[in-house]
Amino acid sequence: MTSKKAAIVAFLNTALGIWLLSSVAVGMVSTRYSSLNAHLTDLSKKNTQFVRLHIKILQRMAQLSGQIDQIDDAPGFDINQPNDRAAAAVKSFLVPPAVSAQSEYPVYPAFDEYKERPIVITAG
Image 1 (cartoon, rainbow, N blue to C red):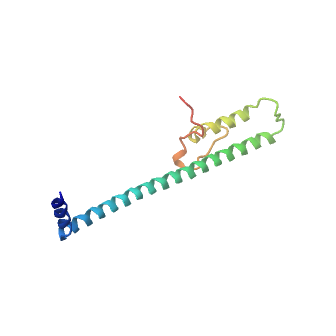
Image 2: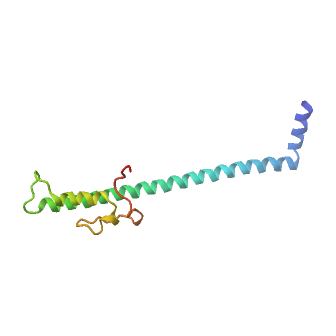
């Protein structure tokens, strides 16, 4: 056993052995760096999507709030009576912007990639 260890150590002390060890080490470092870089890129994409969705939700809520304010300021509005205009405004808030485009209260998408996406996902 000692002669095998001595032979391995002797081989590793040669130019070929050192080249082999350094190649393995560089390969390991390179693989780890690539893996870390891919992870950081994925994290950045997820963070960007989170921020964009947050902006979308805030923008849609601001649109709904403005529509409700207009309805509330209309003459004859009574908070205690059902109101078809308020129901239509809420309905337009719940559907994707592309669907609400022809409604009385259209919703405008904050970003084009979300124009087909509703604010609420329902099980179906």
